[in-house]
Image (cartoon, rainbow, N blue to C red; front, side, top):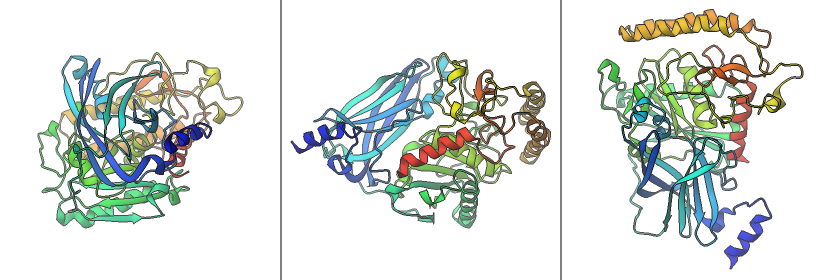
Length: 468
């Protein structure tokens, strides 16, 4: 009766969930297999895994931002009430847009969702966005938290967990976890140096700089047998601790791991809301997927930029705003508005989704020197791809970045609306039909060391979600 009364009362308070009514202080992890092809997907249970204390918010439990391609919900069986929900993207969701998936080749990826442990029986639901923004269900199954089928075996306790900085209780902060990959035991001093440096770069970047007190940052020492990670295009194979690899989805610089379960077991030793993996390799590369994790090469000359850029993806669901680089996905013009906060198809220019940041008198769409930029950037990409095909060494490839900066920075800064918010054509991997908020941004090029106003606002909104 008490639980029913609390449910009725919660409706009058924006359907808030009182944490202690529904949850213990522990974390459950839903491990599952995600399989399919371009137009079909299946989800099957691996197991429910008990982790440590719940590190997330105990007040904001129902995600109302609806970002990402998927939505995960926990439903109390007695009340038939959603008591926890979060949005996310996934490796499978990205793979579905590749040529391999379109050709009908089935693949399976291991994935996980973490949530506070319910006190009573519950349903787990996975939903996916339709093109029009609605959802359809791809998994819906009942579970009992006290079932013998919940894995309650002890967590790993053989990796040192240490803090870079701490500002308070995990439930009131955004907890970031840094993992090292391709570092031997003898390289642990280097890992600590790299981790502290990259975190300092991010927290020298707005809006993270102003919101640093809202974060805790942890790290775990993870040992590999040898330096670096695998690079299949160069026939370089290494047995690294987390199995990170270049050439994910056959994209030279894209770095992912498909060893999700191993990664999650290691990460469970520390509290985290967001995970970042830095790998000990000089080759430029990285990746970031919303509410999953991000990766970056710590030895690349572009590590500072990539670290912040990829965290923009994984933390705030920011889209790539560039369009001249090769990507693994098959991209086409959308039929409906995108849900990423920093790109738009501009179906309704009068109601631009970031119109509150546009100064009066700024034309929509907003003119800029796209042809001049493309004449530089496209030639650069062609040169880079040829050098990669020729097996040119890393140092020569890295030197191209500086050449591109020297050519494009003055060109972009000379534009009339540089630094202004508008709708600039070119973004989300498409030169035409998609628009970004500013001429330049961390999400557009390696030129700028700050986020545009729209991206900054999206990041602040996400921080608020965790801490307020």
